[in-house]
Length: 482
Ligand code: 4AD
Ligand code: MG
Image (tube, rainbow, N blue to C red; front, side):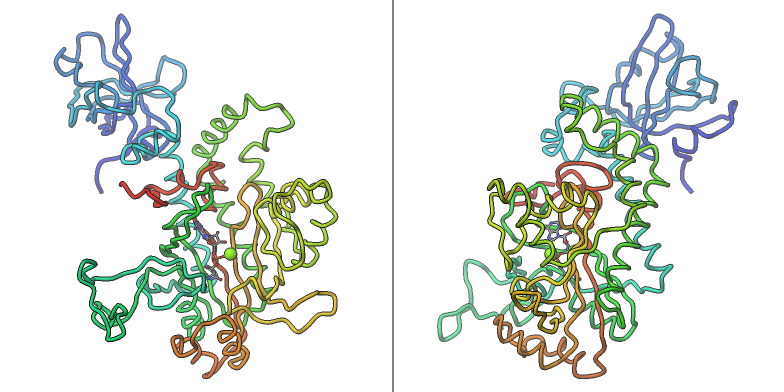
């Protein structure tokens, strides 16, 4: 199945005849020898290929520069130099593709992440990004593994949709209409009957509503697909196109939902710790390097320690009402250090979430029972509680250190009448979602689910600071180059 890769070659016995194919990271010439470090992305490690001076003809040697692609045939031998156990004694070398040093932007020196974003087509060739991409893959694999092992079915929900699942209205339109010649109705409005689907359509913000249909038949499903939000937030935590994992389970209530979310994220993080040791160690060193300039007490926990801490400690579970209480009594609130005011009913700002997670509890937190007014129409309504100033719903958000909200979910309203009333209240036409409401008409059942933002998970596991650096080709306001 194709040529053997560097990851395996590095584990071959000394004396094995090997063929190495990959991109040159560095070429170094000493008096007696030429050293070529080659990487093929299968591992963070490069393999060193060595030739005696004069062995490779001058014309070929000149073409072997950083970024060029080569094939090397030779014998795997014990390495005399420090830094690697084995190396390849070159017998034959072929240059597949050159990389003119005057134009190849990835020279062997430190590049800023901002610069690398501008060359996103080449940045997977750096150690940092190849490590991130391998970890991203491993997390995706672990997610599918977890659900498969727990009796969930992967449901492929549509990407083009006529409904706004979250009711937030931050959607990208999908149309084939000629924007220069829009068809109009008699009232002068755009006539979407003429459009491809005969109605207004958008890119989905969530697969949840269709996911619920699946759960009402298969009991436990999950989706794992791209989602799109046209929110104009140019932050380090938001993308316009991101991947979401949304499990949906019949016969699960809020408590079961929390247990699943906690067990699930701990499993996938643990899987990455186990299977991406080299890459995580590399990223940990990178972070330590980055933090050297900070005073000791401001440095964060080493990456692997942080991941192991999350895996081995129970998440703190608190209600929204309790959280508001904590915030009201907090020092930053009393000293007016928060930018946004705290009061029961507010949508928690990221400064509030971070205070709870990073300063107060110092571990992941699951917040539950949010005010009804700030959450989506489909969340199950709680019975009135005298301890709470207003109506609440059975929502849960999982908050992570350094990230804020990583998961949002809830038990779903399974009562037809309550759901329809709520839709009217928030201005969603029940007729438009007749198929969704049918599940509450025909064999309704308690059920729950949540959405995990995949890139926020990758952000947490890699310790990176900007969400645009954990997806191969980020989509954000004014940015869709690659
Ligand atoms: O909290 P959200 O909006 O929840 C839903 O979409 C529900 N339908 C999920 C469900 O119950 N099935 O989004 C879920 C998660 C957030 O917690 C966050 O991690 C991530 O998706 N997310 C984003 N990630 C990157 N960029 C954005 N613009 C994001 N918006 C949400
Ligand atoms: Mg949310």
